[in-house]
Image (cartoon, rainbow, N blue to C red; front, side, top):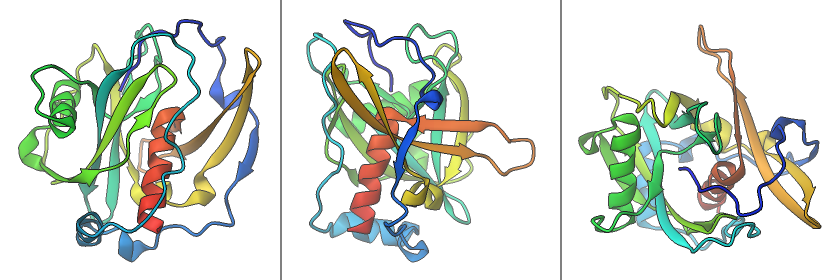
Length: 234
């Protein structure tokens, strides 16, 4: 999921350089038995009462609001993993950032689910036949006025991805249990233009052979994952 350039751009900075002001080690992670395909199907069929923690970022653009959707694709391996993308380094905005597959709603899309599935196919070549949609999370409004609907889905293994090099530099997977453990959620603050902006990060370093690269998950992506955590732990 990408956004348009800011009307007043944030100064260039490495988000990794912003100090961590807190980690929620006092909160419990989602138990393993709740992170199975069947448990997730049941949770979305019978959702609990819960409140999203992150829903609207501070506005820093004067652009008109635009509808968008992202896919939160959970791959059904021995344990569930989350499929994420790394934006291409030559992109003019948000180059190299970690994101969900997704984007702006087209006039021909039937609904947010249709947008998320279409964008996932266009960006990384994930075909719909491998995807089982579970449900949606509350909308998340970015500071650039994108009104994003997160679509949560299970993905059958055996897919062959074809990332679009114009948009995607890499596709990788992170264990869902890691992301659903708030001990891995870091809080940050940044002062800009007289306003305090806050966000979460969830840095992850792969443990697979040949994959020791740090994946720095932050911003809107981390905010929507935090909402998924709140939904599953409610």
